Every structure is written in C-alpha cells, then in structure tokens.
Length: 86
Image 1: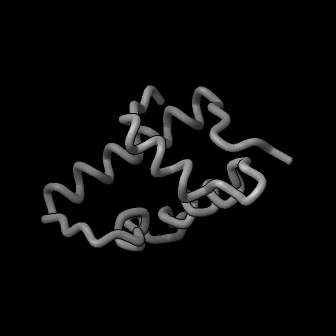
Image 2: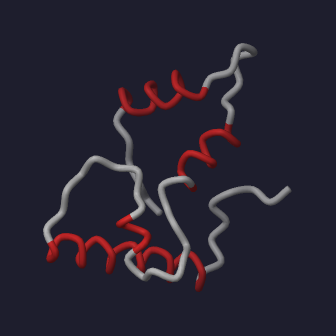
C-alpha cells in the first residue's frame, strides 16, 4: 500500500504493541485495525461506525468513502494479503 511512517510513529506503534518478551503482538495490532471498519448492510457503515473522533462534512465523508472503496477494490482484485492466515 506504500504507506510511510515517521520514525516517531513507528516507535509509538512498537511501544503500544510490544509484549513483555520484546516481540510485537501482531494479532492485537490487526484486531485493532479491523475494529475500525464495519462490513455491514449500511454502505456508509465503514465511516459511520469508525471508532474515531474526526468529524467530516458530507463531501469529505463521500470522498473518504470513495477512497476506502477504491483501496478495498485494489486489495480484493490484487489479492493483497494484509493479515496472515492461520
């Protein structure tokens, strides 16, 4: 997806998900990411049910929805594995 993080952002993620043995709790990280999205009957549910404090006007919300839909389409069409299958 070519997402870039600053060193500070990487360190914050490591600090949040580091376990006592020093390894990263990837399962917890993925569950938190998955928890932001909703895959229900409401087509705008992805945004309306996000656990975020951001407020969007209608145009911004539609733009964000279109972007998320495009990302989902790319992931599905290119079969991008974003989480390991166990």
